[in-house]
Amino acid sequence: MHARLKILLYKYYGMKEFLKSQRVTYNLMSFTGFKSLVLFALLIESPKSYKEIGDYMINQPYLRENISVDTLRVYLNSLKRIGCEIKRIKEGSISKYSIVSNPFELNVTAKQTDSIAKIYKTLAKTLDIHELLLAEKFIKKISSYIKNPYFAEKVLILRDPEFVSRLAECAGRQIIIEYNSPNSGLKLIEILVDKVGYANNKLYLYGTSLEHKQYGSFSADRIQDVKEIKSRKTIRTDAEVITVGFELACEPDSADLDAQTKVLGVENNKTLIEITSSNHFDIMQRLLSFGPDCKILYPQSFRQEFVSILQEMKTGYRIG
Image 1 (cartoon, rainbow, N blue to C red):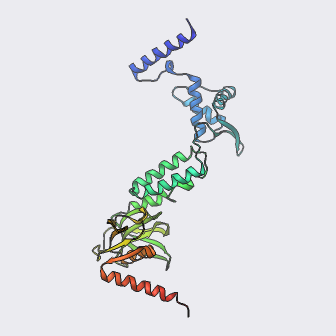
Image 2 (tube, rainbow, N blue to C red):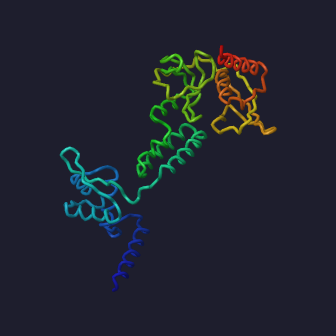
């Protein structure tokens, strides 16, 4: 019988056997190919010594056999032929085999990495913190298959996912944090936590502070530690809420909009926006950041206070 026909019949009956039993058996396997794949998976995970490889092969349920150094060399050469670069490295006094590169790696350029990072940062603003943590875990995993060594550093947002996860679990609870304030240095702040979210290319803890009785945001980068999680709430959340209407002469960036703001419409090439919050100081800071493109429309009391601040700022820059 022709050799190729034998192979086809072998595959046909092997497939029938699999469809019938739903089990992989020795009759269905190419051992050289299977061992090469097993070896590839082992070395991708981490460098392995001959003993470590041998121990795994002897305990592998479909193999259960010893392999000699010569046999191992056959499988290593098989991997080299498909494009793997394999080197022997020293870890202490032990020699290990390591895959330096392989043809299945993704080649992402620096320019492509910058684009991915930009898109990801925009997407992150729409994600729940738990979804963001999952996305970070996914990116970290695929970065090991990307040749660009700076990919993860450029794209990942969260410096300490475990700490961020801990903060996220504090939602709805009253906690005491150690906070490195830009104005007063290290201090303890008691907060009734609302959520953790990503905005303006930073991660924030949102909640009502005991000190100011106002809803505010705290940069996660400045939170040194969670000192205590209270068993019951003592902070009232019924702080006075203010709604400020303003117009922007420029197109608002997505980073400027969050759950506290809404676009009312566009008139005369100016975007009308409302922001609602109990954090009076935060509203003032955000509107000042828009510079001359921003004009306060209402309420009148907030508008007058805003103008007074601008006049004080102007006075401070007068000469003589």
